[in-house]
Image (cartoon, rainbow, N blue to C red; front, top):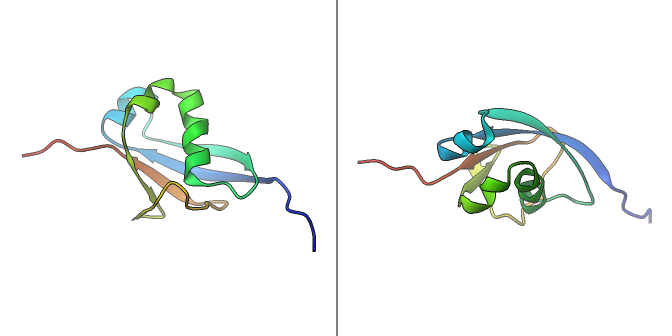
Length: 88
């Protein structure tokens, strides 16, 4: 049994609504180095880069499906940060 190793991967992250106002971009490719990285790990990386994201509650879609933050992510996954949308 081989020991687990740190994984290096690239994921595409898309932003919508008020998240775009904080990141000043609607998408980017993010490098992750982690052991079995999760959506929560990615969220921490992005909050370090964009501290104001910590104040925004977002649903996070992984490959177009809303997922829990404990869900593992893989190389080349696509994630989308979906803040609450106002409407009427």
